[in-house]
Amino acid sequence: MSITDVSRRLVLADAVQTEGGVWTAKRVARTYRAAGLDVPLRKTWRDDLKRLSREGVLTLHDAPGRRFYTRKDDAR
Image 1 (spheres, rainbow, N blue to C red):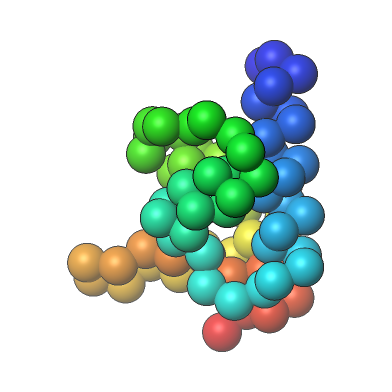
Image 2: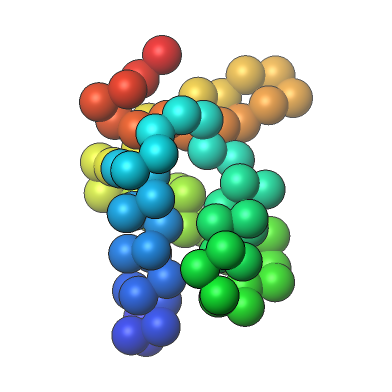
């Protein structure tokens, strides 16, 4: 894991804590772009969401045809 990976996930974790709501790969992409980060791969966006879920920041909601995450303290 590189320092860039950690920094990128810190940006995402901060946005999750600040904004709350529903988090999808597309929202992660928008967040990274707004922060000036060049992260073009959907796999990276998804992996970052999974990582924050494993770390206890996010809760996974897995419905047929739709996977999204919410802040752990804001679980639906």
